[in-house]
Length: 178
Image (tube, rainbow, N blue to C red; front, side, top):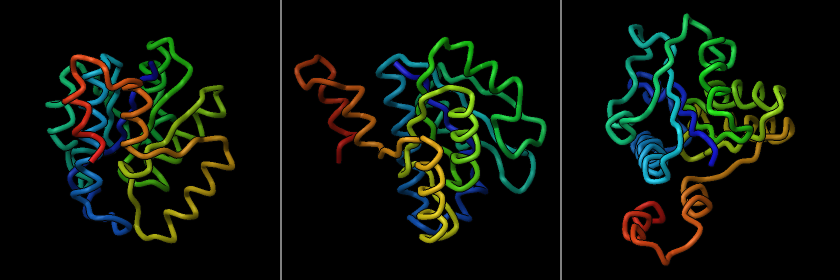
């Protein structure tokens, strides 16, 4: 199963999201962490300047995915420009990625496009990524799709990873589809 990359889900970044309610986006990011934990898939997180105005990562992500690996960046806006981040992704040995980032047009789009250019298949979770306006979201979606990124929503990610309802943890999965 593909690793989950949760990029820049920081307290200060949520304040700039205007194309959806920040609580909805935040809940979807946390749901992705929980989904990854249920599936036992790798989670890699990172934050841009967490000691500055962007703020720290929201704690719910690592609380929901205690196995998540945090990779510090040295100021790079595009997480894919950080060699440690790329090394962490490549160390999973998987060529398909699920990516969400607080700002669709930057935190999600930049590394998603870069990963595609490096030969990865990338699924971008749009409802766990938000941006400055509905127009910015539409432009960003067009850009990433043209680059080969496949857009999805959290419920689709859950359904695709869950695969079947006849399983002992089906009740846990039901909470992601509401």
